[in-house]
Image (cartoon, rainbow, N blue to C red; front, top):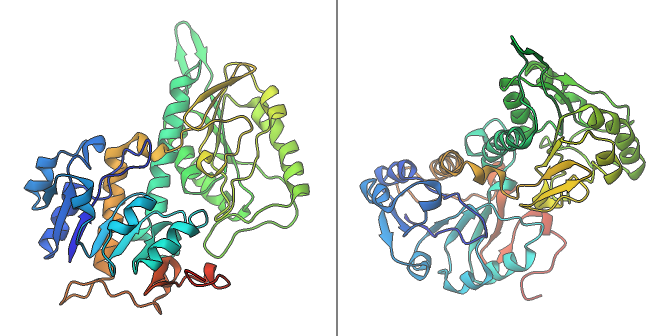
Amino acid sequence: MKISVPAEVHPGETRVALTPDAAQRLVAAGHAVRVETGAGGSAGYADTEYTAAGAGIVADRTAALDDAELYLQVRKPRAEDVPELPPGAVWLSFFDPFKEEKLLRDMAARGLTVISLEMLPRTTLAQKMDALSSQANIAGYTAVILAAARLNRIFPMMMTPAGAISPARVFVIGAGVAGLQAIATARRLGARVEAYDTRPVVAEQVKSLGAKFVNIDLGATGQTKDGYAKALTDEQLERQRAALAKRCADADVVLTAAQVFGRPAPRIVTDAMLAGMKPGSVVVDMAIENGGNVEGARADDEVNRRGVTILAPANPAGRAPAHASQMFASNVVNFIEHFSDKESRALRLDPGNELLAGCLLCRDGRLVHKMFAASPAPGG
């Protein structure tokens, strides 16, 4: 296959979809790989590393979008990119399909095939391709490091001749992949950690990392078949906020990573809860790209509310772009290898495949994912 990697154009995106090592794997498998000049620069990968791996370097975006069979990016394309892509090509990236139906319809009308990595079903077989989880791991780590850098005290307990220092108290809200990595990182730094999630099933995972799981009786809760938290009712949210307020007041750091797949992130930490926290405390909102969990949080900005510092990194995984790109690229290459014909090396996109059915959005001029079952065809 002819595989192209255009540079990322989303503001603040530092990752690259393919690292030199990953490019070498594809070249060794018989694929022709080209990368837009400078595409890996923000992640620390020079053009010369790609050429040493056997990839070609093209001078600009026009060349990167021209005449390939498969396009790889971390983020979705711009609307103005679509007319430049050749009909019949495959686009593979995170796509944010719940917000981008217009863009998706334009790509379907162009005759493009779109695969959205965040829609990949979370099964054991798919773990090697699960870019959403790999990036969430990096996000959970970087969120704790950001908090530690801004907190007015240290994380670990210390016994010194000058006296004893008690460990910082960290409270993690949302124990998905990012939350669990945040717990593990905060524990490595020596903090005392508590965590809460609406899914009781994650309690054992929290405890296995050395943190205390906070139980709040909300009535019937749970998770979807893909492991995501189910949305709470307004009454449950109010009951949850009341119980969380005391935990936040006791904490030095609050990290929020609560997401509901396909919907805006739930507002969990209110201004009233922030008012009850100690001056000098730090709150990190990891869900800001989906609306945020914390009232008053602003993407990529530092907000001070009554002495409490609120951080909301819009792309927390992008704070460690070298490793985030390494993991993303490995997920992408694993995807290509899993769905490629061993003889022709072309992608075999069987819509009857359970994994592919979950992440294939459009093909052959129409939207094919079940989320669009009730929608009219492009142009309809």
